[in-house]
Image 1 (spheres, helix red, strand yellow):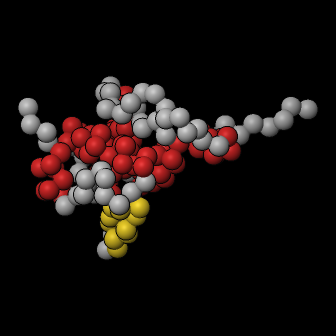
Image 2: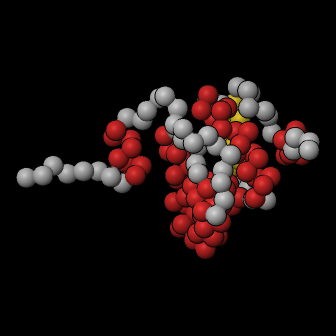
Image 3: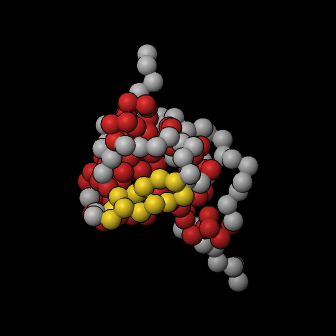
Length: 139
């Protein structure tokens, strides 16, 4: 079986995982963002998830894929979680049925991401903010 990534990336004008930056299209604007090491490590699996699920490279498709990945097993790095969390929130607000459907579809799937977290842990305040597990002191 041939590797689908080169064709997928060529079709959509995407750079490979080792590029120094990547482009994010938001409406008529295009943002040039740095390609951090955690993103470089995740992007092959993320792009293959697009191929596997059929979610397009649009804002809607990225929201749906983020929801699918949260259901199937997201990339085990707090920075990736922090990057994708706003997509999930946008999806819940703007397209709740599609977002929920993608999440449920993910729950019956398995992502290609590794299951062990990288050695770099998140600061506890960030974890609490992301998960909503802010604890109050007992009196």
